[in-house]
Amino acid sequence: MNIDQNTQSPSARPAVRLLGISGSLRRDSHCTAVLRTLADRMREGVTLTLHSLEEVPLYNADHDGDQAPGAVKSFKSAISMADGLVICSPEYNYGMPGVLKNAIDWASRPAFKSPLVDKPVLIMTASPGTAGGVRAQYQVREALSATLARPISRPQVAIASVAQKVSEGRLADAATLEFVDAAVADLLREIAMLRTAHPGR
Image (cartoon, rainbow, N blue to C red; front, side, top):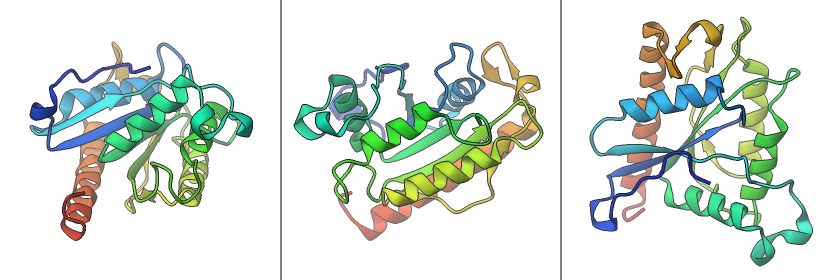
């Protein structure tokens, strides 16, 4: 299910559509707060729509393909429609949350022809700790690389001490906002380069 649903008509669709995916299901998730903040800050012609993983079931190959549950089909369709992804994940026990790995596994099917193939992805992590979730970030990048997605190459966005940087459900730290905005700009440049290389994309 979508957290924030874009209701624009097809003729009014923005030039660039980004899909935000939070690795946390928690209602007051810091990662979701970061993504919602970014959605509010998109420049003209760009939208960021959040898609919750709450209804995506555990991966079962018996239910793959045409037999996939509705929530999985909706998730994969949202990825297909997006020009790029913005993933923000917490770190659980030195790694990425199971809910995010599970979602990547579903989205990676069918192999070599999934909606993740060639999809530009900005990976971010956020943690109350001082490392900012960098160990989870490594795992997310490796998993996406296996799907033939395109995690963009840039300095890592690892938001440390995030609990002190979020206020009233939004990221409020000026320095962090500046760094995250620069990361989104890098993602948009990657999308623009791909469109130039592949007209009609």
